[in-house]
View 1: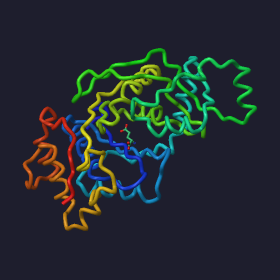
View 2 (view 1 turned 120 degrees about the vertical axis):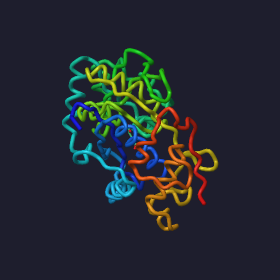
View 3 (view 1 turned 45 degrees about the vertical axis):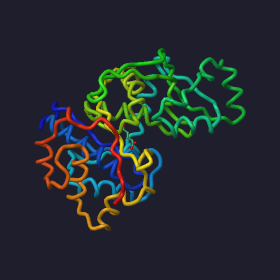
View 4 (view 1 turned 60 degrees about the vertical axis):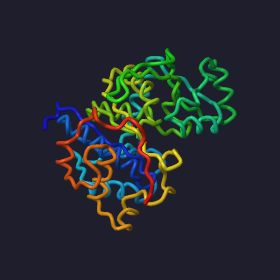
Length: 301
Ligand code: GLU
């Protein structure tokens, strides 16, 4: 496979074990990449929320499921200079400003980067140099935000078609100095040659701001496929507390990784339930147009 073939990726945050919804998204990302002749890359998004041992277990589970990836695993924690360089470029172009809003407000924005809620109202956009100095003198350490010149942007998504969503003055570097997810993801996807982003549709609303940011940095915008999430029987996003939701839990119930993979593939309508299929057979049967468009409700047995 040539470097020019483009690449897809899976980008887990090592904050805990992957659950069946995450594994299903990973399987889809692999199928989308491999079925289009792309490389498939593994990127560990470890700038935040790292739980010791989680990365190793996540990668082992993905491999046990039959997924493979090209090249070494990339960890965001090793790439800080790249994010700094992108931030400097935006700053040199007058496209950033310091934001002194309280830590709590910044945390709210950082912990909910995926939703349309929590848009920053631009409070610190027009601070004068002396106002900034005053805030510094109070000991406030600023975050850095994008000076967005529009409020929405349109992306193309394989499953959602043309999608227009909000763009705001997104945090690029948090008050604690850590590059924000939205900057790191854009920088890394471009640097790694990722031209196909397959991920859960909780991130669909983030795609417009990421695509907009890519454009400001002169980077190409990937093709997106935001896939339906897994929900619990109450219609809420699947979580660890919802029963036997990890591969380890499933194994404890006597199910092999192959059986779990097949069950996930059946939930995606790639094979009928109960059919055993190798990853190559799944690849041969994979038809994106036939994927279910509604969430998968996982009811533990
Ligand atoms: N690390 C993010 C997550 O686990 C995924 C980011 C992405 O795929 O763009 O939710």
